[in-house]
Image 1 (cartoon, rainbow, N blue to C red):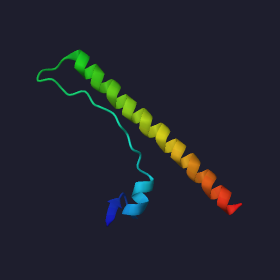
Image 2 (cartoon, rainbow, N blue to C red):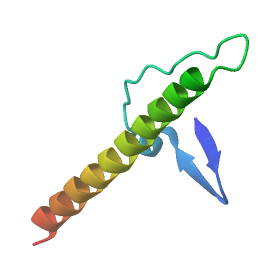
Image 3 (cartoon, helix red, strand yellow):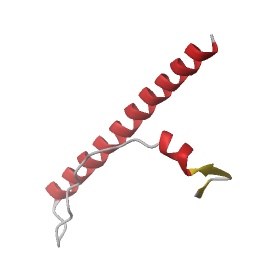
Length: 72
């Protein structure tokens, strides 16, 4: 299966390599605006962003080290 990403096309196998598994529960919105609920949702989203950023960097580092091991 092919998926479109930006201007390029990526095989589904390749796409799985770059996807991180994030387990995070997001706060559900209430029927009416409540500041504490909104702040909680922002904290949850910040946590997801932090996990994505750190996971991606770690996976990228591991990939570079693996390539370097096999090429050297």
